[in-house]
Image 1: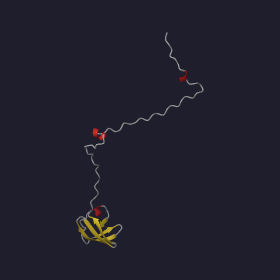
Image 2: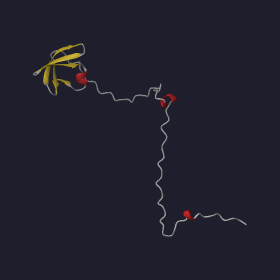
Image 3: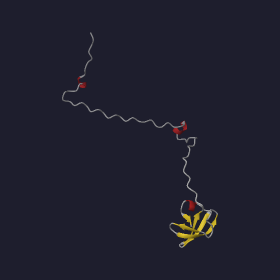
Length: 115
């Protein structure tokens, strides 16, 4: 004769008992991204250098017309006159006094504009 499975009374809800609400799903952890080399997992830099993103080259400013005696403009100091141009620097005399700038960077980054 087949034996019927026993039912534990604690497993059967009573008629006036509310069933337990379903539990919120446990968030699963995503595995960390696989390092490209075993050394990366230990904090050692990868021997492969990632490609640098191509940055659009800013247009070069024509500074061929800048010479001693030429006029330049600065946003704060106004119009000035180049009084010296040597060793990567340009010195300009403004009304407030003389100022020295890195040449040609001051023109390329927009600090000075040739007049």
